[in-house]
Image (cartoon, rainbow, N blue to C red; front, side, top):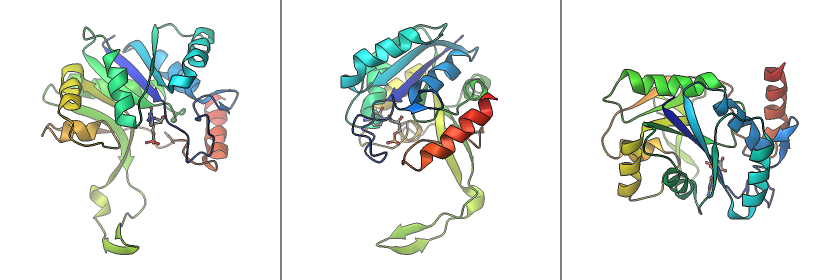
Length: 228
Ligand code: C5P
């Protein structure tokens, strides 16, 4: 096993409309974040887990982790004000002896063990890569919109929707965080800014993120179907 998985679950849950954050909201019979921890724990490449949570949730998360049937050790650490700060906090808890690290959104409970395997395998197969991220080709047409009006329609053939897990050699992502000049919405963008190639792995079409209240029914139905 050569991969540490950092599950980031320190968001405020503002768009979900749940003031206490959504990580502990019950989805298909388990707290939301439990699904991601169980999937990562079941992936053969994973050596250790880090869970990044809201400071107010530390005790509840420790109790959750203690009650789950996990084989791997889990470090629970407090996150920051934005996703990037939470990832940096998680990275501080990662052992440098494990060569690869993957970040995963705790809000993506449908992730399967094979998706962690796929991003790690892509990195192992090509030492020139700065990262490997899960995603899939875009099926919707995407517009660049300025002030409510379309300013461009990029060729859909070149567009991918990326998700998590996003995996990196540990020293690459550490350097990327040290050099970060602005806040991005994913981890790979920090590595891209260093000029390093990032591979996309055509992974899982149903790796949905629970963001809005209306996502709950869809995510729950997909989880229940996958568990059957
Ligand atoms: O905001 P977004 O939907 O991109 O968040 C994706 C993931 O990042 C969620 O799992 C959320 O809990 C996490 N996050 C975090 N710390 C923040 C903001 C978001 O760990 N300050």
